[in-house]
Length: 552
Image 1 (cartoon, rainbow, N blue to C red):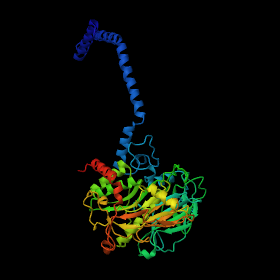
Image 2: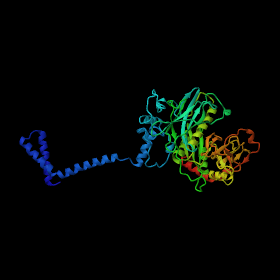
Image 3: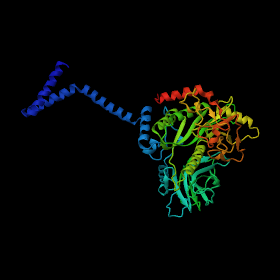
Image 4: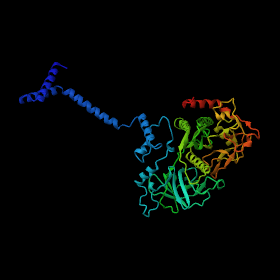
């Protein structure tokens, strides 16, 4: 600061001191004011710069506040919001009901496919009802008023409950099926009859653009069970209802309601129609076709047993065989360590899709029957969710594996071999493999690594089961329309149906106790170590996962 500047500053301080003391004469006020004026005039340039800089910073701050967050910040904020509020529900849907999720940049690790995340039915119904959908009071004479969320009755979060006469319908999911020449909406439910009769039913098909729904009759009812297996009053059986979609080339239904008696009846159920995208695939006979394979598994129930090591070995073996995705259902009956292991495969690895499910509780105490019926429901949900993504879908349990034999080392090579042998059929619904037991009662080979259950158990019973007992299949999802856990129950008219695969080509290896204990000794069990073809790579892959999980 210059000497002159110091003097000016000192004069101002003296003036202010005098004013505060109240001891300065009136003329001195005027002189002090002139001194302040001169001082401000001398410092006008620095003051203008300071004020201008502050204004510029304020403008920049407001502009930055309007910009979208960075990728990392957006990903972190979105994931924390989803976990904190409602798992599986997009954060945008929670903050702004009715808006679809939009990801500008995909996350580094894909936890789940967007099409497999459940939409918020409550939000969809409320949002659409406020717009230009079919309006009108339920007391009016309007045909098929738009369904109200408040009229739906949930047996549990996964099932909507409707009673018709002495029957109970528990609606689970709906799917858009464009495989047939006339595309259909398929409604999967549990119904308290296995033989019928069923009351006249209609589908009310609602679209995103609102307006009146299409009202079409149910054209087919398929039950995933035979009454000779068990017909217990009060238990609900997996049932699929079909409704043909009018003008499928123009629009796809967003919602479906099943109503009874009259097609105009107010709906007491509403299901979002799952519309799996059809991938761009090479023609069936193209050399570029890669025969993609997935696996459907029932609910996992191991509440008191840690099966982490078994799950790692099983999943890694499926990966070596060429499986691209395993779909299983979590009903909340897993130990903490098993859940942690499966979370690795679902959230980090991506091989596993673990779908939460709440089992339908009914009055009957026959849990064995109810669990088997629940399995059928899950297998068909898996089939219809993945029917366009895979060329074949396997249906088997976590203690089972369909094993190619001889020089065949993958499902792709196995299926190609079977297609070449199947000269009498160009549209085979399923290839089914005979069951053979590798029971724990037959001792493990001590020369093999004991921490790997399947690798060390290489002795099996001598004979395969009959072709009609406990088989497991690889299904062509373009042809199968309803499946049981052991075989397809319905398939399209152009299909030849299932094929019994010769046991020298492939077999279904079952790692559990036998049904007939006599087979543990007679005929004499045999060594079957075909799994050792995968030993080196399987052990390496499993140990790598063990290290990732921090196992010693």
